[in-house]
Image (cartoon, rainbow, N blue to C red; front, side, top):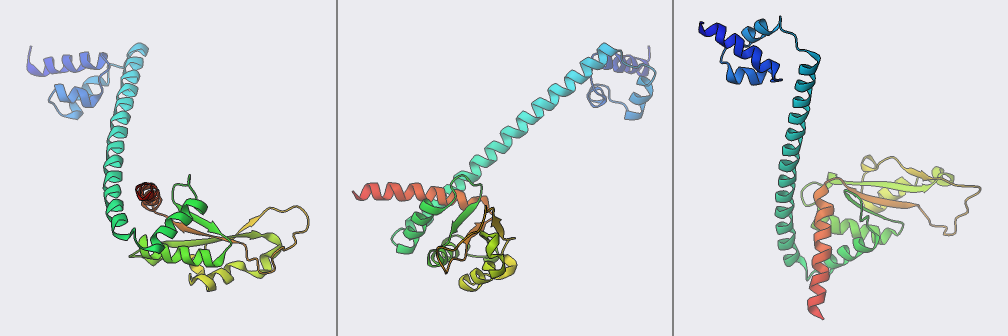
Length: 227
């Protein structure tokens, strides 16, 4: 029996066991075209197709598990590196009043469960202070990372609150997201004549919210040591 015949018989036997073309080629070192030619007249039975499908599903599950583990490990390493940077920055800035105030403000008013940095308030002075904090401690290189969005009532749409906030905060209107109008039932009466809705400071990078969480915990530990 010549080698080609043996290789063909082996290829057919491996296919019957549910191996894919790629797996067969790893064991039978011939051209892929040869494998295709040999196997075209040997269709798989229903049972053999089920075996092949099951193996493919198992391989896919194994691949996904491996990919997930690799992704998780990269995330752990990335978070560890971010934590070390955050700790060094905390140690440098902790005696600056603005640094402590910004962390405390976000602790009180910022979004905790969001995936990115999000701080919303109707107080313009507090908002401007928070913007100064963001510029100094988070967004050092790219001012365009700072986005804003206004939340107000539909009844006040004609007042263009986003224009007012843009002027007060020094953020161009093209960096404001679409204004969100709150649902209302009946007539809305302003209890505060100067009310201009709420504005939200938004930073898109996940690293910002994680760094803030690290700093909050570090601030807690810092003051525990001061007792």
